[in-house]
Structures are given as structure tokens and as C-alpha cells.
Image 1 (spheres, rainbow, N blue to C red):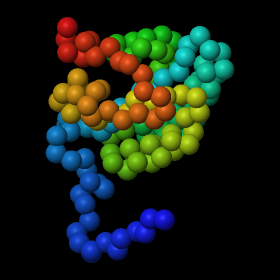
Image 2: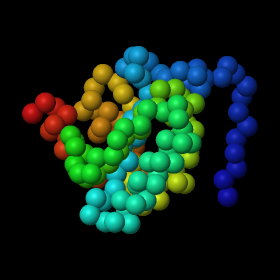
Image 3: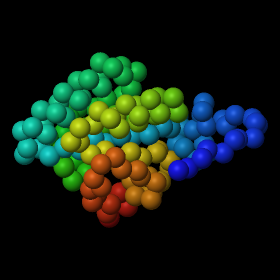
Length: 139
């Protein structure tokens, strides 16, 4: 069994209140791309209900319309939710971890490198989908 270490008291990390250096300003934050399979009626129903719940439970977040097919580098139907503070990001990430159901989620920061944001710096909840990264390179 793992035993937690006792931490040495020190100054609290600034990351609780502001994103680390390297984030794009003023947008900053993270994008959550919530994927679902558009030809699966149960997945569409769940994603639609999830979209509605997010709008009600997280009214401060920027949420976009549902795309019923691939858009940009995203290979399937999806919708996007953006966070702009570490507090929003943490709260939404933890909520989504247990409420995403059959949806898979690409989470990425917004730095000044869109390609790197969607590839090297991306985190996945659920299954990782291949994205069309050539579109992010401008090819």
C-alpha cells in the first residue's frame, strides 16, 4: 500500500490562481472537445443531454453548438467547452470525469502552438481518437 509523504510547508503554487507562463492571453485556459458517434442514437442522446447539463450547471463556461459530424481536426461529431481559469478547469475536469458517459474528451491547453496543443500537450478522457493534425500545421 502506498503511504503519502508529509509535504514541507512552503509558498502555495501560483497555478491555483493563474495558468503557468506559456498560455495564450487573454483567451488562456483549456478547450474540452467532447466526442460522440453521430450514427449511434444512444450516443447522440447522451451527448445532447450532457450538452444541456453543462449549459445549466456551468453557465460561466463558454460552450459551443453541437457539430453532428467531423469539423476541423476532429474526426467525429463533437462539441466544445472552454475554461478560462484554473478553478473552472479543475471543477469542470473533475465533474466531466464522472459524468461524460460514453463520450470521449480531448482536453488541451491554449498556447501559441495549435499543433502542439492538440498533440503533445493534449490529454484524453476515455478513448484517444486520431485527429487530422495536418490541418493544424496549415498543410
